[in-house]
Length: 220
Image (cartoon, rainbow, N blue to C red):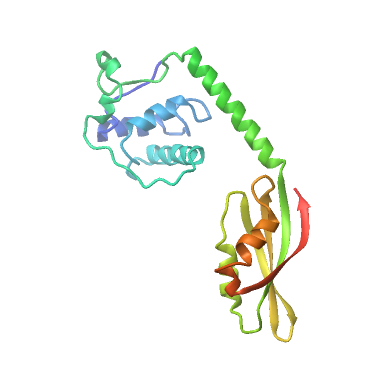
């Protein structure tokens, strides 16, 4: 049986949605579906705390969408109270703000969805099978080097496929300490040699870093 929500840009509409979501995580079933996306598109923004169920659901869908679209967003606002109705002019005869959650999916949409899912699985498998764990020693110039700033400079290096991990200071001698740090890399995206030669031992890092050595390199 089709579920219909009306006037989701109004308090009354949000109240109806909040009541429907009581005890539920998603609109239909126990996984994110096209139904959630349709309803999400009709809600102008995160519902107020007075609608706890709708607010929690909105945050959940937002989180899923953020993972699917990793690009940095600056934020936009869509003006006009009639915005939700304008999004579906072809269904005006069913009510300007009504959403039919069980519309038929075309063969093209099904095929595109299957291709996206297959591509996503292949990409995930490739990334998971090509990771390495690296333990690195990073040495300062002398005992006067600020080790806190040295570590900040090291961790400031960012690139796709690079994740900095735990670290500690290890005494070397004569009051000098070295930074020993863990990092995880995606092999197809990050070269440890390039990381050292093109980032860690050049400006601005070389103001604090004298040299880098690979202590351990293990495939995950």
